[in-house]
Length: 205
Image (tube, rainbow, N blue to C red; front, side):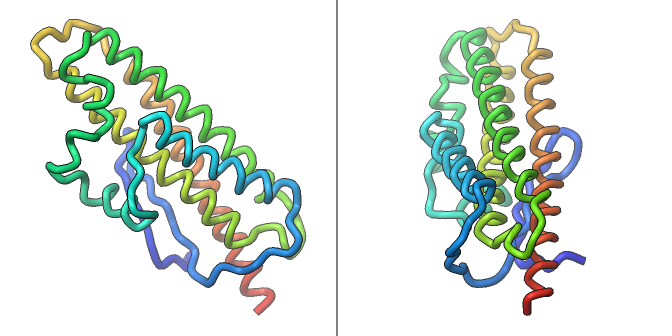
């Protein structure tokens, strides 16, 4: 059984995706492989893009992200949420749906890029092949992908309830399903990376 002290969960189309967190104090890395450095960079870039692109809101750290995933938004947050930013209740439905599709594709492709770097680290041998910083950086990106997914779904739900909504949402559903699958794959990679770090940590303790 994995050594996990914190989980953030989000029910996806195909099931419930969770993000495991690895305990321990952050360590100073004096020697990093190219893959490890790349993973941390692409993870940070993905997190920044999620906020800059308006998929999610900037909040007070990972704990706040996890709380939002579990508890949802308060009424005070609704004026700044994704659905409001893209005009889900006011703009032409065709424009809203096109925006959701475009954002979903971008978020999915970005997460796939981060996951490729994570798999490179996962396949790297040696005692320094998986550090806590690698695991945490990847899990941060995964949490933000989960939040973006839920925001996209929420915006779709709002536009579909409008009286002037007469568009086929099947293409949007397909994009969201593809993103959900990418998140599920990333969750499995994160679990593997966490397991590898934990096994290396035990072998050096």
